[in-house]
Image (tube, rainbow, N blue to C red; front, side):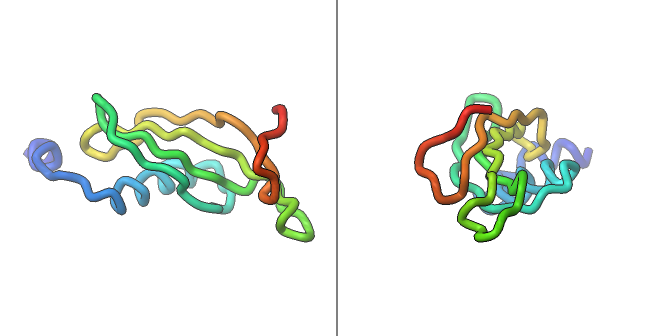
Amino acid sequence: MGSLAALSHKLEMSEVMYRATQGLAVLKLKLSGVSAVTRTDGGWKAIVELVERAAVPDSMDLLGVYEVHLDDTGEVVGYERIRIRRRCDLEEIAV
């Protein structure tokens, strides 16, 4: 019955952001930020940036950009690193 209540619960965007970042916590990387959250047919998609390698100065940090997929209940059902970029760069670098 608990899952039925979860299905009827409409997720707030802030909750989707929280669940997406918590879903990536298993990677044990520092969160840089959530750059996008969008509704999909089957739930939600979030773009999350994590610090893959810290550097000095921090503008040279390497950030992994992850696409996180969540179902309608907010459970993470998959993720993929889609690119790596330096914090200071507007262009991506090859993986």
